[in-house]
Length: 208
Image (cartoon, rainbow, N blue to C red; front, side):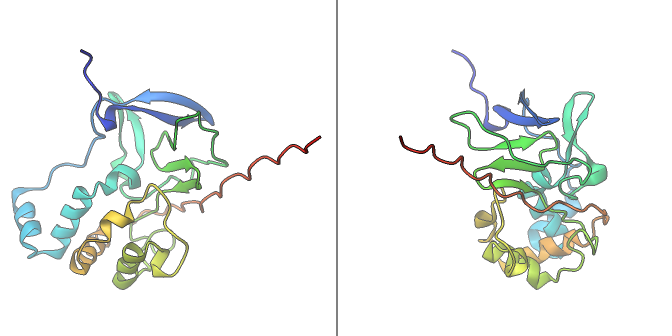
């Protein structure tokens, strides 16, 4: 009997220079170094909001989408020099791709651009850069974003694959802890592009 692959090891349709390619990853994507025992204790107790925020960012797998992936000597790995900075502005994507039957979505080689029925979405820069990240946001705006599924609680809707519906169950104190932690990471100037709307359906052929 063949061994079944996990979801993270399953085949994903990727974008490479505009051409779809199939790629299989063995096991989950690399993560940042583990938290120290002291940091874990502070996070679990809630005594240190920043430590708890980092714990929740790890638990919520925020790095999986918001930290670009690069190719390393052993395959794809998180590019921690660009931690949580979202889709790299230099990785230009101009349109979505036509997916084969049975596929719902595709992701770029950086794992930061996603193409699906909603168009193309790009993972946001979560660093505290005030011009291209969330450095100009307030804690309340960050909480409102997750609770409402809209940018800063009043802007456009959050697009897939952002699982805000799962994160909105977190207590406000936990969301503010995540915000507090994000304000401590190195700011990275990286302007993530706006989403690309879905292509218009082909015009129907006139009836004879």
